[in-house]
Length: 540
Image 1: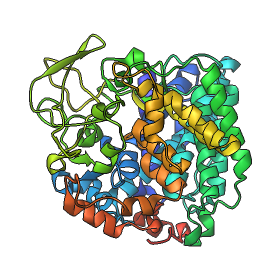
Image 2: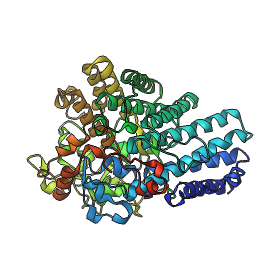
Image 3: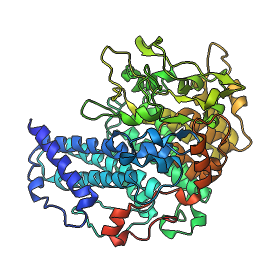
Image 4: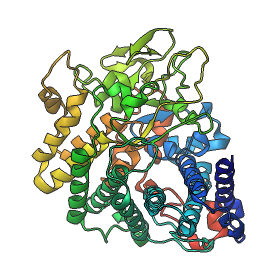
C-alpha cells in the first residue's frame, strides 16, 4: 500500500506542475514530496509512476497524442472527423492538414510531457540521498534518464526546439532551447542509459533496457542525419530548428554500430509469424522482437486510439473505422507474396467468422472486395491489431504489448545507415532480411520476388515504402516523411479519386498541407503564459 501511495503522490504532483493552467505560478514546494524518498521502495514506486506518465505522454487520454500527430493525416490514413469526439482531440485539424496552435491534442501532449519530465527530474534529484544498493541505484538512474531522453526525442521531432530541463525546479519562464540542444540532451540521456543498463536479454519490454536505449539512439542518429542530408526545414529559414550542427557521416556511423550491436547481441529475433506481433494473446511471442512497448492494464488502457484505426471495424472486430487506410498504402504491397498486405489492411468485421492463431481464437475480418485492385468505395479498414474472442467484450482495452520499438525497425535503420556508408546495394541486402519474414512461404521460398517487386531506382523511396509496409500505423510515418524532406510532396500525391473512403477529407488534406506543418505549434495557451516561448514555429 505504501508503494502505491507514493506512486500516486508523485503522479499527482507531476500532473499539477505540468498542466498549462498552473504555469502562471511557481510550482508547489517539492520539499514535502522529497521527504517521501526514504528508502528503496520509495524510489521504485516513483520510477513506476514515471513509466505510467510515459504512457500518458504517448497516448493522451488514451486516444490522441502521438497516435494522431504521427499517423493521421499522412498518406497512410484518411479519416472521418464527424464520428470523432472533437472536443477531446480536434482530430479534424490533423485529418485536413490545418492544425492550429490552439489545438487540444497539441496542448494536452505538451502538458503531459512536461508533467512526466518533472517527475523524472524529481526522482533523479533525490535518488542519491537514498540508502540502497549502488547497483540498483545506478540502474534506476539509467532507467530514469532513458525516460527523459525518450521524452526529448519525441519533443524534438514534434515541436522542434523546446525548453530543456534536467534539474528541478523547472523555470516556468524559460525560453525555447534550440533543436540542437534538445536532441543533444536526448543523446546524452540515452547514451547514459545504454552504458549503464544491464547487458542482458529483454525480460520485460515495458521497461527500459540497454537495447531499448541503443535502439532509440540509433533512431535519433538516423533522424538527425537524414534531416541534415535532405535539408529538412531548410526552406523555412528558422534557425532555432536548424540541423546545420549535424555531422551526417558521424551520425550514420553511430547508427550503424548501434543497430548492428543490437541485431547481433540483444538476443532478439524477428518473430517468425508477423501476425503474432499484433495479436492480443501472443505476449510471449511479441517479446521475441519488441525492444520497448506500452503494456496496458485495466488501470492504464491503450484503447481508444486502437479503436480509431488499428482494430478491424465492425461488430466483430472492436474498431470504429473512424480512420481508414489509403489506396496508396494498400498499393505498396505485393498481395500475392507479401503476408503483411491482407493482415494490415482488410475489410469490415461484420460476420462472426473466427480463426485460430497461436492457439488463440480471434474474429476474422472480411476479405477486401476489390475491383481492378481498388477497394469498392475505398472501404479499406486497418486490421493490424486483433482482440481475443472472449465471452465478455473488452474492446476498450488491448492487453497485448503495444510495440513502440521493434527489431524490424532496427534492421530498417541499419539498412539506411549501411546504404549511406556502403551504397544502395548493401542497403538492399539488409532490407531482404525483413522481407524474408514477410514472404508467404506457401507461394514461394524465393525472397527475390519481393526484392524485385519492391525495387526502386531511388533507394530512399524504396526504403520509405518498406518502412511503411512494415511499420504502418505504428506512429512512424510523419516523422519518416519529414526527415527525408518528402512530407509535402508525398501528401500532395495522394489520390482524391481512387480508393478514398473520405474523398472530402482527402481533398482538404491535399489542398492544405505545406512544409510549414512539419513541426507542430507551441501551444497557444503556454505561449500566452510564457512569452519567452516565442517565436512560434513557422506557419503558426
